Length: 459
Ligand SMILES: Cc1ncc(COP(=O)(O)O)c(C=O)c1O
Image (tube, rainbow, N blue to C red):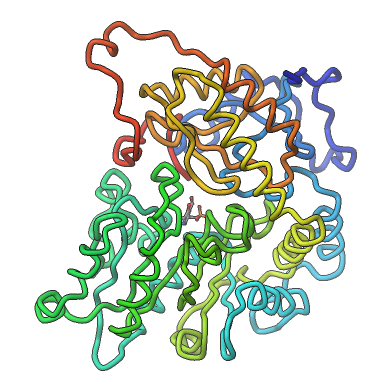
């Protein structure tokens, strides 16, 4: 395994100066300062990181890690990618921000690029945001404007789904622990069972419509990320498209985590086994789009969806910011130029096959698509495995008590994937006699309601 500590520690980037440098310190010192300065919504940081390059990051003590989480499915090009760095620097040095009273070439070019990648029909349009939650917030507002032949308040979302932390996006998120402290949330959201076509049909049934009204929108992640990397069965989205179209409801795909190449295609729904050839009404994006720079987008397919929000009905100061747009254009450009979609499929396959066939009794299997994977464990020891990984020089995420999420940069190489396989082949967590008495957890879908420990928290 090639996980050497960085020999020279962690040098400050060459461009920092006395004005901008944050100062020096060890991981322990920074962690202490964090506790006194940063609001405690995430728990203590696992490490304090100071530098990144390619698929590696270094902490303040100079230890190197292979980053298999990429800032939770964000750093598509890894860290400090020269093309991305140059594009952001050039744009910031040319025109850093304008209000939405003005357009910029980067913003317009990015909108056109996204529409082309989405193969969106005539009349489609893009709205830019700064994050995934804001993209879903905008989609929620579009749903409220989908009035059809009368006012519609019903918005369907899936159990286990995660759509963000702002009040509207939180209303679409099913996990009680996230929702309950902030109720009342925007109303009208109904949760339907995950991957259950009859349950969806029931929500659109004449009885449901007579009792609660027509549905304004259905919001779905093609692969549920925060719930433990859970895929919908082939055919689910086709049924969802058929029902929503028949009832004039919007089909909103939350591709915040799955989009921008993460699953091996530009958007996950574009894979035949996932989307079955459907065209959605709305796709929300963020995370990987800016390669690490905050940017999100709502792609509205066709004239009807694209005109639901009229002038003055929605806005954001930073959305469409030219630097963010330049970052996204650079990210998309490198993914295409370097054929990273193929890399995602190849390296994702190596990880999947390698880890599942390594014969470690702690590993029940690997699920997911491309480079959005979950290693299902045979015992609820994901937090221990994540700690062992960190000690061995790998950043992973305990997405559920018994599942480890891998969402590495799309540039991960086959050799790096082999290092990961070697780790999972060897990792061992001693059996806890007390836990052993109650038996191993059942392999299969993770329970999102129990992912509350700091090591299993989501974004
Ligand atoms: C599917 C999905 N939607 C929305 C969000 C929220 O995005 P953000 O954290 O950028 O607000 C996330 C974040 O994990 C996500 O995975």
